[in-house]
Structure formats: C-alpha cells, structure tokens
Image 1 (cartoon, one colour):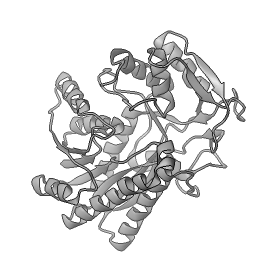
Image 2 (cartoon, helix red, strand yellow):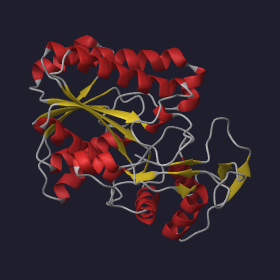
Image 3 (cartoon, rainbow, N blue to C red):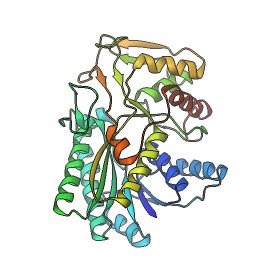
Image 4 (cartoon, helix red, strand yellow):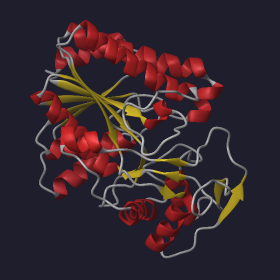
Length: 340
C-alpha cells in the first residue's frame, strides 16, 4: 500500500516510516521540515539497508496548509491511506502564539482532510495526544474520560478529533483511528535515529540525555511535593518504537474494519521523574545532575493510561521497559551528541 505520512521526517513520524517499510508498505513523506530534518530519512535508509528492507520512500517538501501542494501529492502518487503527524507541539509556544497553532494544526488538518475527500482517500490514522484529557481525577485514564484541555496545543488536538468525529458522522465510509499517546521517549536501538528537538528540550528524556552528554548543566525538576512515592510527578512513558508499531497496527485495523476508533497508546504503568533519572543514570553509567524548582501550573500528580482497548482492537501492547527506553535514548544521544 502507498501510505502518505504527514510530518514523516519528525521524531515519531520517522520511526513509524521505518516500521511501515518493514511491513512492506511504500511511503510518501510530506513535511515542511520546520521542526524536523531530512537527515532522518537518510538514517531510515541506512537502517533499512542493514536489515535488508526495501527503501520505498518518496519525499515531498510541503506545508499541509498548501492545498495545491497536497493535491499534487495525491495526483502524483496513488495514496491508499494517511498517517497524520504534521503539527506544532510545544505547549508553552502555543500559549504565546495561539493563532499560529490554530492556523497550522487545525487549518492545515482541514485542508488535508478536504483533499483526502476529493481524492476519495478515506482511511486515516491521526496522531492525537493524552493532553486532551486535561487534569485527570481517576487513574488509569480510559478513552471515555471527560475531555478537557489546558492550553492551545491540546485544544488543537481536541478540535481535530472533533472534526474527524463530525466527518465520520456525516459520512460513515471514512475509516478513522485516533491514537492518544502519552509520553513518547526512546530511540531506535541502532542509535541512528532519535528525538532531535530544536533548542532546549521541552520534554523530560531529551533534557536528561543532553545533561548526560554535557550539552546542558543540570536537569530542572518542577516540583518534589506531589502526592507520589518520591514526591515527583508520575507519567506513562512509552517507547517510540512501540508507538510506531501501534500506528502500523492501527493502519492494518483500518484496512480490515469499518468505523472510527479512539485508542490510548501507553504502557499502562506510571514512572516518576526520579524513576526516569535513576534508570537513565544506570543506562549511561554516570550520575545525572538535577535541581528542584517550584511546580508548574497545571501539572498533576499521576497520569497513566488504560491500554485495554489497544489490546482488544489492535492486538497491541508496549514491549519495552523503562531501562530499555533510557538505554536506547543514551545510545542515540551519545553517538549523536549534536543530533542530526
């Protein structure tokens, strides 16, 4: 099958492209490279060659807000389905510049869905986020948990979900899988591919990795007075390769089943910030310097997924443990100290 992957040069997108190739698909990557690097596709080629996987990737540089560019892709390639990753994702930036996020994430998605409908391509896996749950009051979080967002980034994800639900209600011939994943971390086990954020990382593990490799002096931990065993916040961290497998399995599900599904992807377990720091210290065999700072507004004590539906509908579960997530991240960061 020919699979269009928007944002396919990014962190989760690139790892998913690799797994799509391994599953025998041909891939068209559509990415404007605003927060990704073309080198990620070169790394996919290297890994594919090492594992005798046919490298069937076409790259088109473009913006999902550009309807003409999207139509050219659908005209040039016989697209069978879409995996939609393209979107801005920094929470703080979204609060500082909400219109930019609404234009890029929501308007861009509407353009994409409109072109898909025009070309009668009605199978899509959407990269959503657990941010649509807001601050939970019960654990674990099930897919029917009340939806509430605390920032424009999360609101764009929820708005796109609502658009997809409305599309399906109006036209049940759409096959849609909405994947809400929790905290993606890790890297490909080869060390050739991993997370490569611009500037100071917003997420925990790339921050820890850059401290370990000497790019940053110390980790800032926001809050040590949470109602958790060690006082630091607990989250559900899931390996990026497990997530990539989840997207391929969601795609397989769409080809075999009608309907719209909304599914959590996580491990179903919570790890504290200090759990992650300790595991990473073991993986890199050196201490991680850190300091405690006051809590950030809106952060909650504990946040982890109920993954029952992923097992039931997709046959998917996370296979990699926290130590493996940290070890793979360290292998990536230590061999690529400046990223791509």
